[in-house]
Image (cartoon, rainbow, N blue to C red; front, side):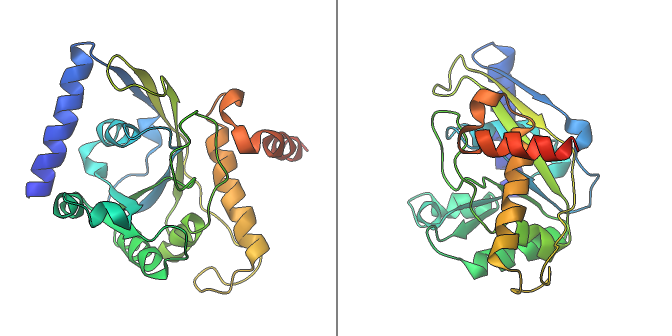
Length: 225
């Protein structure tokens, strides 16, 4: 109950700041969110720390999310508060099977999981190379992936203009290996990860594509055939 109260308090504060024009935040595509109690994995580019309150504010209360966050945050002074706010700790820089399993179980049981596939903030707005694990969570959980994107003022919180764009959900499909196990070849996982990043790039201006600029051109050419 306390976690819900905290979530509502934070999003209400963001809403008040928006009304007072201290920030100008928008959200589009809410209608694309799968209906509850369907579990899902929401993926988004990551520019600054305030992407997190923007996403929290932009999602309806029915889709109050779980977050994947580096374990250092959970072990910090405010670790108990972060845990209460539905954070799943992840050990960065290594394959954290326990975190993947926990996130997949959460999604399978109706949880809404927010993941930043870049693994860290890019600061400039230009996309970094995506990291593996996201597709595996969706596949094991048997849930759709919903691509999202953030565009707008990148560095500041106050008086920023930002938009959260929610795209259409899709179900990743495995062409090689077993979707429910570890037996997915590395090249197939790479393809699935690229697919996630391409779906996000489709929601972003070209100048945000970064690492995927040339790859995205090839992807669009293939889609036109």
